[in-house]
Image 1 (cartoon, rainbow, N blue to C red):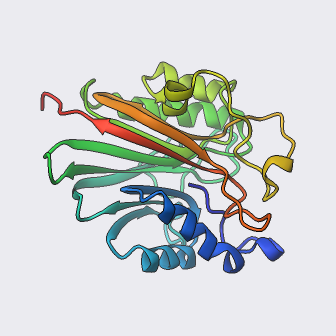
Image 2: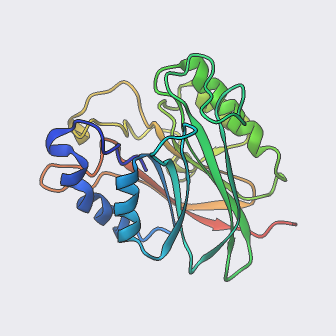
Image 3: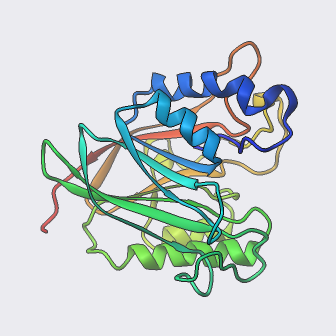
Length: 256
C-alpha cells in the first residue's frame, strides 16, 4: 500500500485529514499482512496505534534517516517471525543509503520470513519501491529482486509487494516475471491491465497512459485466491494518491 508520505504539501488531502479514512479502508479488508511504501514515522505511529495486534519490520533508506518508508506489518496471533532483513537496490546492495544507475532516490527492499502458527508453514514477504524516474535503475532494481528471490528453493512460498512506478509494458516488470515472479491480479482477472493505480487523489477522473503500477507478485508453492484494486472513496476523497492493492493466498507446505 502506498499511503503517500505525510510531509507532502497536499492541502485538503494531507495525512491529517485522511488518516482515519485510510485506516478504515485497511481495517475493512482485515488483512493478515500489510505492506507500506513511502511511510513517514508519524504515519507508522498512527497505523500501529490503530492495529495493536500487529508487529512491524521497517527499512529506513538512509543510514541515519528518521522515516521508515518500507514497512511490513503482520498479525502476531497468526504468525511467528522467523527472520528479517533487507538490501539496497544498487550496485552495492549491502551499503546503507547507496544508489546506482540513474536512480533519483535511494531505493531498498525489506523482507520477513514468517511461520503460520496454526500450520507451521513458512513463507517470505518482500516489500519494495522502485525508482520513479530512472528506467535503467528500475530494470536493474527489478533484476536484483529476482536474483535475491532465486536464492530460495523453487517451491519456497514468496510474496512480493510494491509500488513499481511502472506498468506491465515496462521492462522492469518483464525482469520480475522472467525471474519467476507471477502477477496475482493477472492470475485472477486475466492479462488485461485494470488501469492506473496512481491517480493524484483524483480517482477515476485522473488521466494517465500508465496502467497498474502497484503490484502483488507471488512465486513458489502458493496459490492466489483473489486479488483486488481497492477504489474506495468517501465524499469524493481517497485514502491515498494510489489505489491500494490486495491479494488473498493459500500457502502450501514445501519440502523443507
